[in-house]
Length: 173
Image (cartoon, rainbow, N blue to C red; front, top):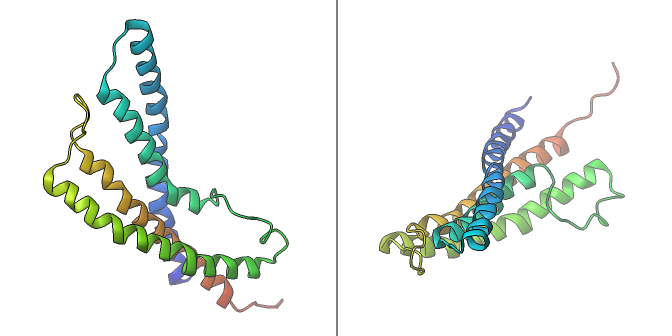
């Protein structure tokens, strides 16, 4: 295994760990959602913090789980272009797509979200709703984390594609 393949495997490990960890939030989503409905319609009680917690868990699953989805080819893509391609051409497509689509998107997300998040942290931003969650800056902090995790997984993709594209085919002995 080459150095680039080992680095790619480590980056895959980050996406795998974060993705599997936030996947447990889907269980929390179901439990919290059930509790909100039972409290609202069964006991005529509502808690804003519980409703916001649903949104926060949902956001965490999608933003922090995006790199996991990329790692496992779970993103939506137009397979019309990929289905008839050889493995080598797929590697080229993945490499160019990462370089010219994924990374620029991650850069734009990071560029615009970091000042937004810093401003939120500076003022200790809270929910606007009475009884809402107090750490809104934490939720907003997931936006640059999305960009970072996707860019890191993109680097793993680039390293893996380059490794396969530059590998010299060894013929039979």
